[in-house]
Image (cartoon, rainbow, N blue to C red; front, side, top):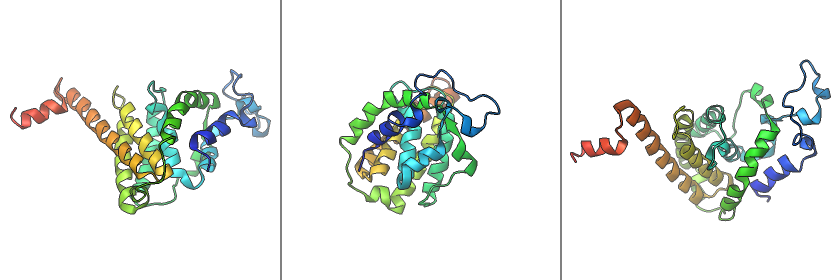
Length: 231
């Protein structure tokens, strides 16, 4: 079975559909131009295209792909809120035990500029390949059982909310946690998903500390715990 990185590379970099998009400076088709006359360099990749590429692995695939831009060492701006909302919707479906994902039909036609997607992938594919090199099916109950998927859904829902908070520091670590957890879900690798959940816990602590610092003025979660313990 092809790895995720090779599938993404083939779809976005070796696909005749996008050949002209790399050199084009245009991002929108002229107004009122019929769809069948839109030049190849103006075609966008849609959510429907991504769902078709994901196939039966949709939950893990989308968690990885949607968290990708914000999980990079140098995060790509502008993705945290819309992608965080989409992942919150996905996580809610995992939380209630749904096996097939649902999106509003109108979302399937929502497009993303191919050039921007490719820029993100160029930065992120090397990191993805590193995780793939150690991934294999193990501790599969973490990813396939109802309790395991419910816990994963709950944790990713909390991290998705954190990603949507417009405060520096509340986006990257939660996105990393979702990325790693989703990758484990994609490959039925419970060990990697558990590692991702641990990152999510760290993200929750960091976000809570930042929010408490804002609410109580320079306090942190650690300071509040120390005060509660009388130290």
